[in-house]
Amino acid sequence: MFSGDGERVYLSLMQGTTEWIAGELKPREPAALKKRIDWARPLIEQVAAERADLVTEIRLNARTKPGKGYEPGNVVAIEYQRDAIPNSGALSEDLLFMARLLGRLYKATDDATYVPGDLPVEVREATQSAATTANRRSARKGGQGFLLTAAERKAIEERSVLLATEHFETQGWTVKDVGASKPYDLHLTRADEKLRVEVKGTTSDGSQIILTRAEVEWQRKFAPDNALVIVHSIELDRTVEPVVATGGVLHCTSPWTIEEETLTVISYIHRTGL
Image 1 (tube, helix red, strand yellow):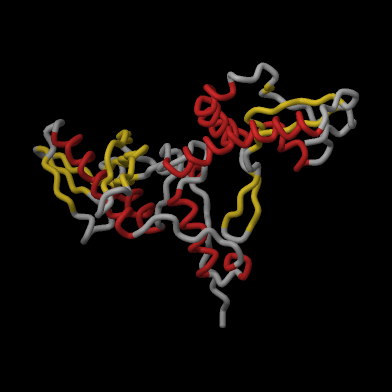
Image 2 (cartoon, one colour):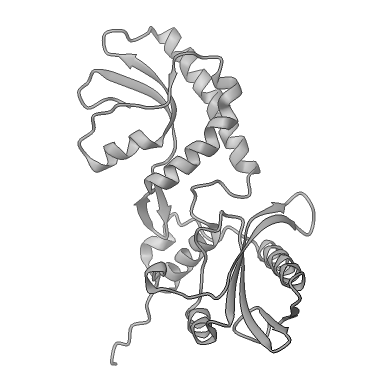
């Protein structure tokens, strides 16, 4: 990475500051970049300690939007001043060192169910599916496709429903799983009380979930006798067959009021009048 004024150059362990989603290259949000950095740095801390010259901030003096996006994407870097560039042998050693750090992150990424800051897999799948259904040509070029298998989705769903059921039963509710026949997942009764519960399980941090139009409309009708349960940070063990879902952190919102500003449209049905 060269600074805009030509005074410095960096050998940077840099994350992707953009990502390819449903045929479009979109910039990562600064908050997402920070989450990824906070995840990555502890993983390389032991090896990085071998060098005292690593910097966590780079100064590129960029004027363009893409250029400015690189600064918050830096994990660690080695800075070289224009008048003190090392010889090729030293540069090769530096490159090999940074490759060691990168290898650790690649290994951690392969082992991780979810990398903080990444788009939740459910959101990526839904966005890709909407683009494909709309016959968007760019969605068929380099699209990342669906990242969960049917078995993995089933395991996540069963794990989240199990934790939600246990959560409500400890509060004295009688819980019935109605997800196969109703537009919500759990029907709860307790004396004269009733509660309709939507359950969402995810391997992500739960900051974004996918809702269908029907789910939104029905939950608005059920409110205030309704609830949203998010079971996030679920772990998938893919070393066994079938895949097993474990862990998960439960968060319950009841009553659940769905505000328009919390919703993002990813596709439309357009009536053409034909």
